[in-house]
Every structure is written in C-alpha cells, then in structure tokens.
Length: 262
Ligand SMILES: Nc1ncnc2c1ncn2[C@@H]1O[C@H](COP(=O)(O)OP(=O)(O)OP(=O)(O)O)[C@@H](O)[C@H]1O
Ligand SMILES: [Mg+2]
Image: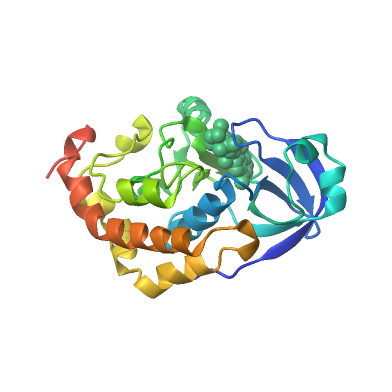
C-alpha cells in the first residue's frame, strides 16, 4: 500500500475550526498540513487508517504524511502546550488549495455550469464510510472540491469520526462490528447512487484487500501513539469482518438512495 512519508513541522500556523482542534503546520517540504494530534483520543489513528484505506479503495483523498512536531513547536503554541501535545509524530493531511466544501461548490457550480471531473467516485465514498462507520459524512465540510482545469475535483476529508469516533475502545469497536444500518450520507452523495453498479468499482477494491494488507496498515501506526495490541487486534477484526458484510449492508438499505433502480 502507499508509502509512508515523514515531514518535519517548521512553523505552527494555528488551530483550525472544528471540534478536533487540528493545527495547520508548515513543514520542511514547503507544504502545509492539517495536523491531527495523537494522544488520549484516537483522532490520529482514525485519520491514519481511514485515509490509507480510502486510498487503497481508489478514493480521492489529500496526500497524507506523518508530521514530526518538535518540542519547540509545542512550547511555542499555547494551545498545544495547554492540551499536553507530546512532541513526536502526528498525522497530517496536505492542505488542498483552492478548495470549497460540497455545498459551497454546488452553489457556485450552479451559476458557473461546471461539473465534477471525478463525479463517478461519489458513491464509492458511501462504501468506505459504511466499512469503517464514519458518523459525520453527512456534513458538507467533510467533502472538499478543488478547482481544477475544466471543473472541480472531489476529495474525501476527515476520518476522525470513523470507527465509532475518536474515543473508541476494543469493546465499542467489537459491538459496532455487526451494525447493519447505514451511517448518514450527505444528500448530494446519496443522490449520485443509481443502483448496484454505482458501488461496484469501490466494493470490488475493498473486497479484494487481503487480510495481510489490512494488517499491514494497522501495524504501520506509529508505536508512540499508544494503541495497545488488543486495540490493534480489534481494529483488524473490525475491518475484516465489515469488509465481508459491506455488500449486503449496502443493498439491503437501498431505500436510502432516492435514485436507486435495480
Ligand atoms: N487537507 C485539507 N485541505 C483543505 N482543507 C481541509 C483539509 N482537511 C480538512 N480541511 C478542512 O478543515 C476542516 C476541519 O477538518 P476536519 O473536518 O478534518 O477536522 P475536524 O476537526 O474533525 O472537524 P469537525 O470535528 O468539526 O468535523 C474541514 O471541515 C475541511 O473543510
Ligand atoms: Mg470534519
């Protein structure tokens, strides 16, 4: 699966809006990353795994990198200091320039008559969200559209609220493994589903992921993030079990998709 990049933070650009309290950090590759911190909550773990699996499923996501945050950067930020952020590796998502959330994009494209160049991937995001149980993909700001030549390029952002949320435990994950209700989808995404064929390309990729590929993603989570062996094992079990349930979960909930035709 994708290579693991590490960049070093050079300047903290401050805290972002949003409940998770990510920071924008300029790094030594000259790029800026939205950084979610490892610590007691599992925001960074969820981002790391969710992003890697979205990429493996062929879905468009911003480039991810581990970001090394120095003690100096922590001390220089009252927010990081107050939250007790540990110096070391955290999870970054490269800032997508010239991007808007899905509803802003829709509003603007209605006037400009522009299209999404990769509209075909939209239903696939529903496969991923119901695989890892992302609970807040109904929010427009968890979908980005970047202006590119000839239209908009869709990108999926924010995996923090996967896996039953950033406070998951081995128990909460195990209980959620068998859930057969769909997580909420944004109406514009649900509308893009027109039948079983809409899910097919992404479902095929998810179903073709082997146990060892899934295990490798979980094993690559930095040790310093404090995931226990038990939690790592539960995460693997959860992903492998739901990979097998996903197809039937989606089709038995076809009434959630207004444009579905068998
Ligand atoms: N790589 C990125 N490039 C540009 N914008 C981004 C990127 N990642 C996230 N954002 C924007 O920043 C906002 C906050 O990010 P994100 O949703 O990942 O964090 P969050 O703290 O979980 O927010 P919330 O808890 O409110 O959902 C997002 O709503 C999104 O619009
Ligand atoms: Mg969000």
